[in-house]
Amino acid sequence: MSITIQRATISDLETLYQIERECFTIEAFSKQHLTYLLENPNAVSLVAQINNAIAGFIIGLVHRHDEEITGRVYTLDVAVKYRRKGIGLKLLDEIERIFVERGAKICYLEARKDNVAALELYRMHGYVEVKELKDYYKGAHGVRLKKKIGAQ
Ligand SMILES: CC(C)(COP(=O)(O)OP(=O)(O)OC[C@H]1O[C@@H](n2cnc3c(N)ncnc32)[C@H](O)[C@@H]1OP(=O)(O)O)[C@@H](O)C(=O)NCCC(=O)NCCS
Image (cartoon, rainbow, N blue to C red):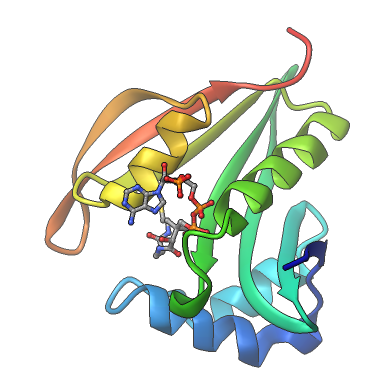
C-alpha cells in the first residue's frame, strides 16, 4: 500500500468536507471554513492519497509574531477505513517539514482530552502537553501540545 502526500486544492473541498464530517460531529469545520483555509496562502493543506483516493488530510497555518514563527495544526483527519496505517503520522511529518521550510521552530496543536487516538499519536511523535484548555470544545476539555521542530 503506497501512501502519497500532496498539496490539497479547492477542488478537493467536497471530499475533505465528507471526511471532516466522518471524523468530527458537532465540532466539524464548515465548508466555508475549509474553503477559507484551502485558499489562505499562509495555510498548508495536504492530502494523503491511496490508489488515487483521498484517505486523509491535514491543515495548518504558519503564524508570525514579531521574530517568532510558529506552525499550528488546525485539523488532522483520516477516514475511518484507512486508520492505523500510518497516514496520520505521515501527514504530521510532512506538515512539520513544510513548517520548518517556512521558518517555524515550534509546532502547536490542540486535542480533546478524551481523544486517545490523537493524543497517543502526538505523544509518540514528540509533542508535550503545555496547557489544559477548560471547556475548549463543545462539552469537553482540551489540551494544547507543542513540539520543537527543525534546528533550534
Ligand atoms: C487521530 C487520527 C488522525 C490518527 O490517524 P491514523 O492514520 O489512524 O494514525 P496512524 O496510523 O498514523 O497511527 C500512528 C500511531 O498513533 C497511535 N494511535 C492511532 N490511533 C490510535 C487509537 N485509536 N488508539 C490508540 N493509539 C492510536 C498509535 O501509537 C499509532 O501507532 P501504531 O498503529 O503503530 O500503534 C485518526 O484516528 C482520526 O482521524 N481521528 C478522528 C479525527 C481526530 O481526532 N483528529 C485529531 C484531532 S486533534
